[in-house]
Length: 116
Image (cartoon, rainbow, N blue to C red; front, side, top):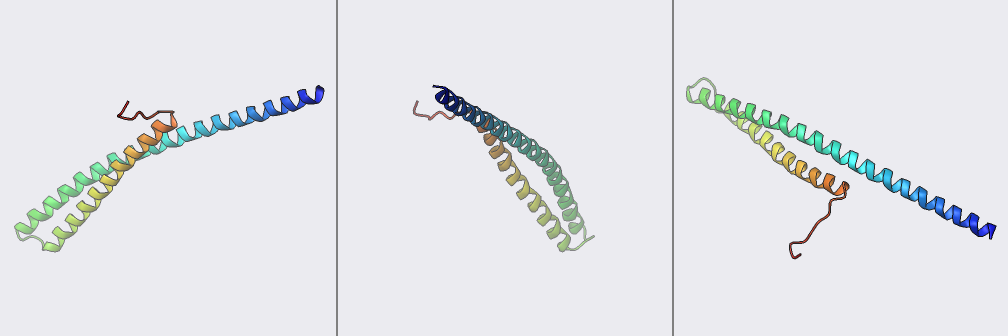
């Protein structure tokens, strides 16, 4: 009987360790998802500012070219820069959405089908 009690206590201790590990892993997942979400939102804000600055630079280059103050290579460079920042912004917006879903799942959010 004493050996059975010791075995049951050992099994109970294993379950406790498994539970603690699961809780710690869940907390780590939430923390990681939250940090990734916050960082990407900050990056998206910076990219929006960069897109606006690149758009202004492109308009200035266009204006200078029309007035004969610079060659068309400056316009092309400004357009290339603008498109690059716009592409990065679109990718960042997708990453923000993906991180929001990851955070929702880490917090235990469930999914319901449309058929319910």
